[in-house]
Image: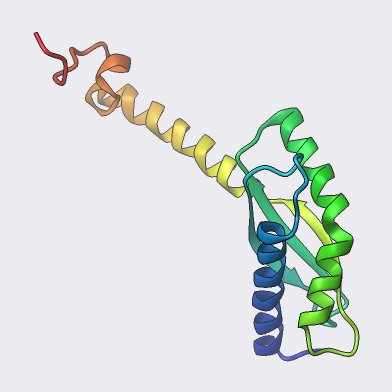
Length: 135
């Protein structure tokens, strides 16, 4: 078992190397705007999950996921070269839906606020005149 501080340091290094590899070396058109949001490394340092998010939905999200899986061997090699460990962790990608969930919750909260106070909504949605328009 690795010390927690070491695990955190390695997670950060994996994130940086993976993100740099995606940005500078991967030219797969299936991969659009992708961010590695976090890395979760097992305490025994054998597996690392790279959480990612993208500006995509539905089928485009699945296409991005296939592109990332295709790029995984190169990212694995770059990470293995950057780490100073006897064994490099096996990498896996997992979609991070935190942003989508936060946006969905924000929409729910906004609707709840609008039910109690319609002035919270933008003028066009609240049925109020838009004060920015010229008369």
